[in-house]
Length: 287
Ligand code: SIN
Image 1 (cartoon, rainbow, N blue to C red):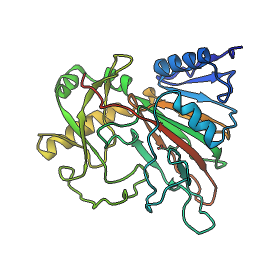
Image 2: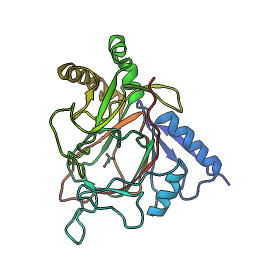
Image 3: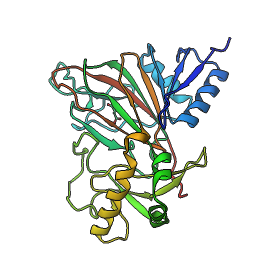
């Protein structure tokens, strides 16, 4: 029998909690309802889940083929035999090496892996251990960011491409194998349209990626910086954001095409362990 799924919107510009569901036991009708809710609300929260890595991978695969996780800052893979699993954690393993990435500091606003030509369309983050305070994750709607732009700024963005930097991850750590530069024009990364059209909802959205070392192709550097500053001041306004205050057993699924997220810092002496998967996406289409 299909589970009686309840979708409760957060009341913010994005996000909904999905109640009455055990993600290990989904039939097709329940999955369809979740998929619809994900497109409608961009971020979904499922509380009280009990997921092994295999369960997380199995649920994630219902959205499509999975990406392999990027390697850790120290070049190692996270979970032997499960290349789809990325661990976000500050915890050290028995060998004294971090078991995950991003440490305990702030993870700045970003879209996952958008420095690649085909960034993931979905990310799924499951809370195994959380600190008593801090480590909250904030999400911003890039549909709302676009809608909020003054008309003159919308017109200014038309046809422009922005470079999404691949030098640093959101925790500020240098990615494995990259030589850093301070000049955004020389930084590694990929150019995407500044304004994209969501391939499934058809809605226009701002596609910024991350601020550090971003560059708008073809503009003098000062002009690129000024335009990016103007766009970023709209893109992270509190009225287009929603925050998850994590509990153990939370699974958060976000549409990585039309959202950005950031994480608050927390006490480095506390433990935070999150397991993440990502669903393969396509090149973001220009609006
Ligand atoms: C991430 O940026 O993907 C991780 C967010 C978090 O740790 O809450």
